[in-house]
Length: 211
Length: 222
Image 1: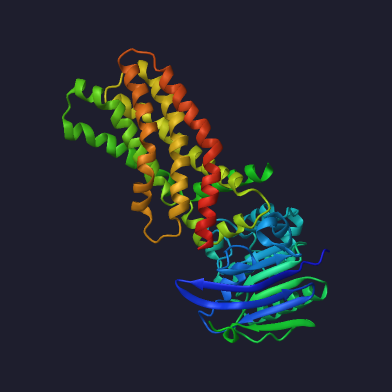
Image 2: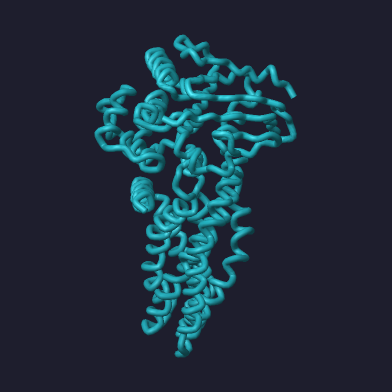
């Protein structure tokens, strides 16, 4: 596994003429887990979108393995799983159809692997059910099932624990910690205190970067 | 290439599970054409003279109507973010999306058009030209409209803006399409118009996917 090294250098973000943060420095190496925290509207999601290359920073640069993100979109795509607040799950498609499309789009996986991933997130028996009949927590689990497939080392997750029950939260926390211990990296936003954290755990409090 | 086929299949499946989205533009097309004889009177000669323009304007408006929501649900549920971040080229993905949309809405419209044109008194000899001109013209309408849909997808009320942005760009297609039909109606060869339409189709298929992809990137990056 190549170690992804994502760096943010002197990053600034402005939304609607409001400066959310500036001079933000961040280094994410293999094994790191960074929890981005801060009050609502402090720019947590914006920071994640900047790191994933979905948005252009107002100032500063994001680098992957030492080179600017813009020059290596494909390299980034091979290294990254992004699960946003809206996770790209279609209501009218079943859990399996959704997951197999996301796999085809990013990294092909076998049908067996997809069923195993769905079973791992507790959706055994719901594979063929259209997602609009699933609960919010179950829909979240469909999106999170991607993390149980062999895949890229860098995970950027925006509020991954939303709508999950306590057992689901604990399971995901352990899974994220295990991923980091195996040399992966995780950047996530969440408001709750994580019970299971790997050795490389850090918290990035955006309220310390007031503009 | 397989992701292209998979995306077309997925879009087809999505459209089949929401049949209302498919039916709306077709019903709109049929009703607009059915309204004209009521408004201008049942005089056969007048309707026949007007029919090339009527069919084309109605087709153009119904394509535009169907395009407003082209990327909206993908934008809202986060699918577009996944497309932008995938290793596959975004222009290829959007071409698959628009192609699937055209096969299900544009092609259905092309097949419905002869029936409605005959209702307006268009002679049967003109039907091949009508079919060919729509077959060549509606993909251009879909692709150009998708550029506008990509740019306005992030806006709350993008529908009217889409029409203002895109309708002027539809003028060449409208002139060539209805021109071909008028020529056929007068017994003149229509191949010149059809060749021009064909070249517009080739241009649109090759160039607009890049514009659509750029528009989507801007909308996702907002």
